[in-house]
Length: 416
Image (cartoon, rainbow, N blue to C red; front, side, top):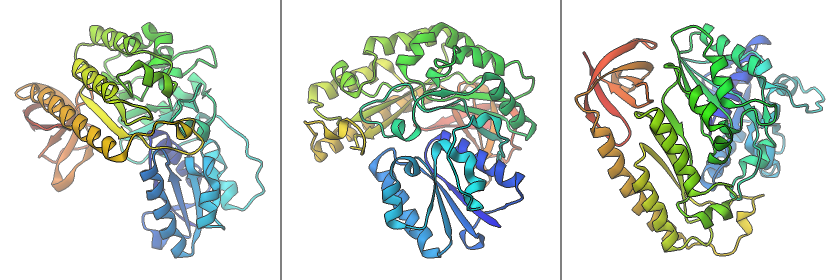
């Protein structure tokens, strides 16, 4: 049987796809690259904002027209099964927590869905990047977030099993390990462990590879901050911190149920920067959350200017089903949200371009992780800056380059 797979959304979905591919390979299914060559179509869905949901529905309509068997996995299968069934009544659903049941779905077995540690299942990784889940779910629910009800409560996986997953990925030729969870900072809080200890265990593995730590919530990062910062110490760990602030106003943060303050956030940033001065800081801002005033929005601008980040992900607030924020009063008008998004984007672009321009003329080492367009190569610096090289260089090589140009999103380099 031939299987076609599409993957959308976060790194956790990509990790689930690796698990599904591993099970398909183990059970002698063939994975194909074209829809027309497949007997079965699998889509791992994302529904984090309404525009993403609409894109998923568009893909499902295309899948339906093929007349082939369709399996819908990911968060939509968990939280929005009725919408899926309204489009494709015969579609099979594979909720995010139960990816390991893919073979049962394909064989039309009667299933009693049972959660299982995803780390105990052999994965198949395509290319040099290995997304590896360290936990499922979240320990609390932000008022705007549909992912928490989709993926459930926090379930941290065994540290020893995660180490085995990393070891397996390295043996498959992977060069970049992306540790992922809905909130990596919460890792271990349910099993008497923490992220810092996990990183130290992983770094006992020998080899020339890099580790990227996924997004962490400031609230949970604070619980084991010293250990986490110490865990970042191995030179193979990218000095990269994705710490979403979401708003520069404490009252909005409270309505979001984020459980931390602006001062908490800045305290974490200061401690990371004091220890790793070259660390890349990535953060997220939601514009137009219900009741957000101009003054509160301006506090977000002020915070971004003070933070001086390397990456800012700006999202216009999107009311999602099954969330508390959806029924909040004080919706901000769409035209105001668009204008605020435009203003903040322009400010961020100026900051990001100025920060990246400081790298011009520097000589740094870059790990090549993928091929770009027109025979270019793309690599990462030790602090996870993306570097584009015009030369065609083998993936996995760690090479010295000189930075010759910079944009808001990446650096441009040439071989030394």
